[in-house]
Length: 98
Image (cartoon, rainbow, N blue to C red; front, side, top):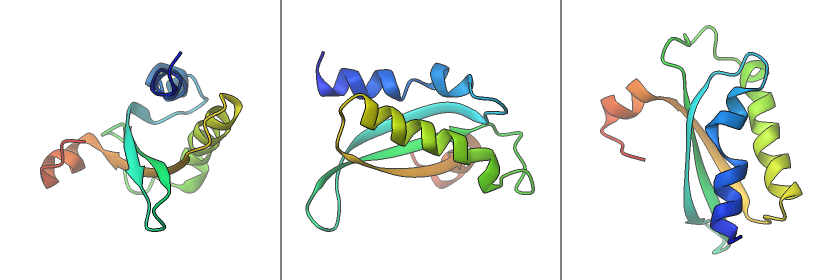
């Protein structure tokens, strides 16, 4: 299995949606080079549009954040994941096609 296939498996939205109270709709990623010139991952976690700003608290997304980081490490992926969070409507409003 290639590293890309391993990353796809770890970041499968189906797995992250199974977490209790998970707001995850989709997960997208691509290779990234950070400001230090190190290879990394840029991960976009797309959240349920019904999630209000009031509902969007760290306690709600922390388990997803931990599952992503722990899953990548457990799978042997040593690239640092830069994780970003947005609702699909926010991405659409900004014209971002991640």
